[in-house]
Image (tube, rainbow, N blue to C red; front, side, top):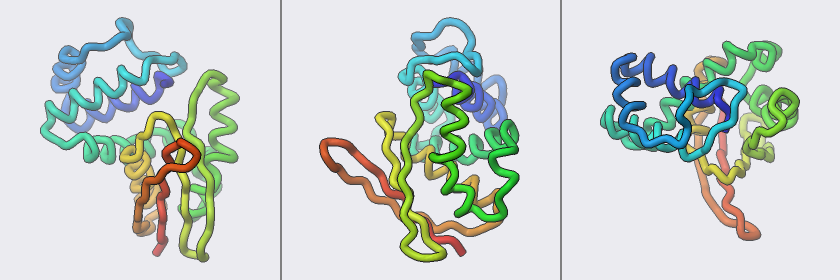
Length: 180
């Protein structure tokens, strides 16, 4: 996983729970990585999950809720860092439909060794979007939080329904979004 995600996770913890709590959490973690996380670096996925699980325990939140809150925070940090990906859009549906075909393409140019989730889209109606998510990481709650961040950014209510299923031996997760 890219260091930028670790940096955002650390910033989330420090902002939401304090620098002292971040230090306590990092001290309690058993990480493979010894040096500090650097944005363009690549680090073991297990290290992020160790930080998430330790942080959730230390701040007394269930891991799924911690991930949703971190996803919400992450959207705003990514939008702040890469405003050119968000600025052209006036509604969340149009923006969300660019993530796989525009944003992820650009991210792969910047970070050739990155492993991003794959999205497929369908539009059941004008005010609906189904995002089919596939990733070996299965960070479903983080994605839900990212969508919540998108809703807040565009000041639009997005109702989410989710379903998890298997197809051809792979696990997929559908985010059925209704915009109002």
